[in-house]
Image (tube, rainbow, N blue to C red; front, side, top):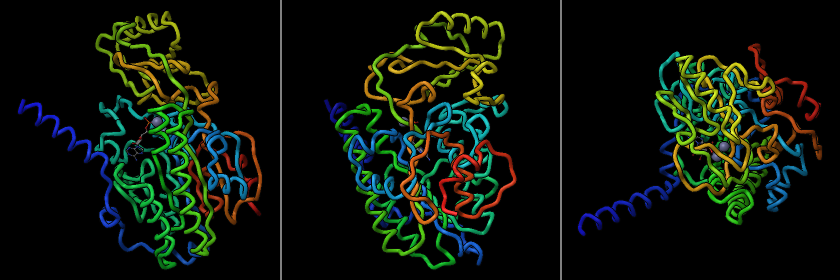
Length: 418
Ligand code: AMP
Ligand code: ZN
Ligand code: ZN
């Protein structure tokens, strides 16, 4: 009996701890600052960009749920009916595609979880050792490009910001934790705008997971997901007020990494085939690593017979998905279509998820809305892929680059005022 009471007390304490958010003072104490950096005279003449990501904000949420503050950004600036995520439509590959202009196969983050043959190590979004290790990240994130131009940047949780990529952190950044209230993130962003000209970041990145969390748990059309959308909309309203009172030429870019689809069926992988000693990355869509070619062939042939799973050998993933990376992509890539997901073990399947092929699932569609002095007003453009945002941000901020990326400046160049 005593044991049960102890377990219950422990669980309640854990739950309370999990739900607890930091006070604003505690939040500030988490901030990391790289000392000694100042904006150059040139950087101080450039405009400002605040790019916020609302994880899992599907392309139709703003209108569907009446998000009025977000709608005001759409009305006063540039929007697209749907931004197309990169494959796989997961959080880490897409956040990092947006800030590098490179497809996940080229930017290093091929999924939320994957194995590197070269390192003989797993990357996983919950493994701080991997997440903070710059050797996993290719390309030059936009905040690194800014800092290389002696333009300060600030980062509230963007994927990659905890690693010294190219040896550089944002001047102001935070270690990722879900315990910072969304409102506090925005309060700090507004404070950054109040810094002296030399110390004020010109590029600010922010991230919210609330809408994705609700979408997974309840599904995209649920009242609780609507509540999450409206809560983030409220917080964005606060940010817009803060920007207005700063009087600075600030551009706001709102993006999401992917959308959300209803799910209701699961295929339990170990129940439909004998995986033997293969390694499996289950982060949806799963990848199987099997270096023994005879065993691989056997798995492949068995998977061809499984209904509702499309299986591709690493070198035969359809070209248009641009999913190539010899070190990290599994020998087999398994794709299903919503409402079916592929699982590691039997569990109830409900609510929503993402990861599906973004080209045959409209529900994977994300958002792109940009407003501010650099953007044209009241323009809606055709769907485009998220890798094209990097050249756009570079152009707004006057940042030059010569390394190769996948994004093209011509795709979004026309949405800026000349
Ligand atoms: P998923 O829906 O599986 O693609 O992943 C979404 C989850 O990623 C969110 O619920 C966040 O908790 C987590 N996440 C987002 N950004 C970071 C980050 N920078 N570090 C660690 N976890 C993150
Ligand atoms: Zn996400
Ligand atoms: Zn998610």
